[in-house]
Length: 136
Image 1 (cartoon, rainbow, N blue to C red):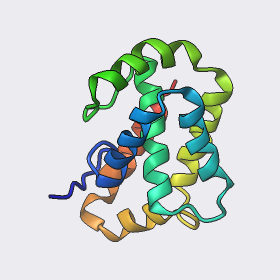
Image 2: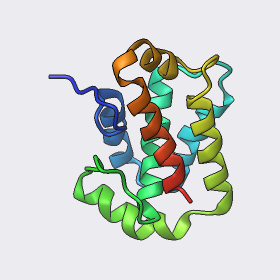
Image 3: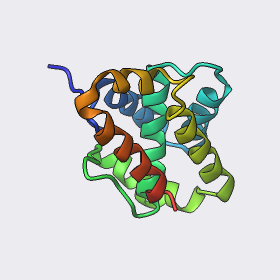
Image 4: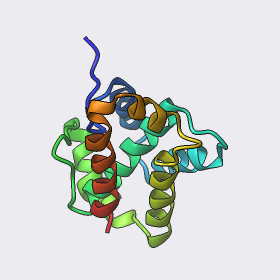
């Protein structure tokens, strides 16, 4: 059964990325995901979903997890101990830039897909804005 909800931890693409994170428990992997997305002129939904999970983990490391935050114990330990101490201001700037890119109505496939679902778009948009707030 597939998962597709407004939360970043409620979709298959994001959840698949968590399996990759388990094999790469380091900040460079998360920031690399975000930087890869920022390099793209047009952000596809897969890359956006992965970057949003990376950003969610960074927000969780700052003590601000989302309501749907659910990860394996080894990821949780990494987030709470290792990642927390490695976050720098420039990482947060990259996260904010990526969120802005995800919300770019001209160049984000994920934005377009959610825009097509009129009933859920506002909730999704608010969830992404909430992520930006939780980074502060």
